[in-house]
Image (cartoon, rainbow, N blue to C red; front, side, top):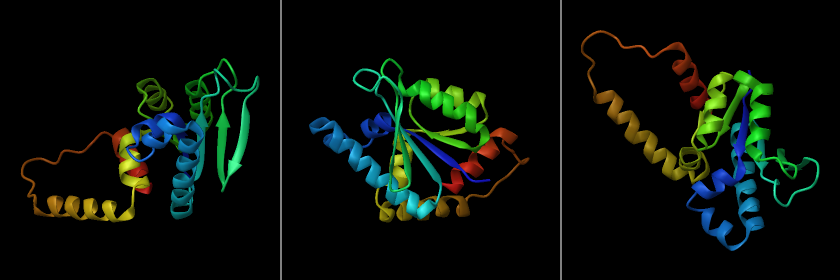
Length: 171
C-alpha cells in the first residue's frame, strides 16, 4: 500500500531551524525553500506528498490547489484553517496517511482514523536535513541496540504501535 504524506506547511517551516530564518524574512521564501526540500525528499522516497498552507486570513474565497515538482500544494480558503483541510484529508486517506505536524489536535485526529503522525521537528531532523547527519544517527542507534542484552519476558508493543513503527520505517 502506497503512503500519502500530508504536511502541515507552516507548522513544519516554523519547527525547522533552517527554514525558520527564511520565513521570518519573507513568507514566500520560506514556502519555496520547504517545497524544494520536500521535492528532493519525494524523489528519494517516491511517496505521494501533499502540503497544506493556511489561506484563512488572506486567501481566495475557495480552496486553491497547485503542483510543484509532483507535490500537491493546497491553500485553504479564506475563513478555513489548514488544520480543517488536513483533518478532511486524513478522513479520506485513513491508514494510508502519514501526517507531519506538531499540532496535537491534528495528531489526535490522525490517531482516531488510524493514520500515523510524526512531529514536524522530528521529520525535519530525520528526513529534510542532509543525509550525512541521518547516516551518523543511524550508526549510533544500531550500536546501542546490538550491545543491549534482553533479560526477562518479551515485551511486545500493542499492534497499533507496531503498525505505526512500520510506517515510520518506510519514510
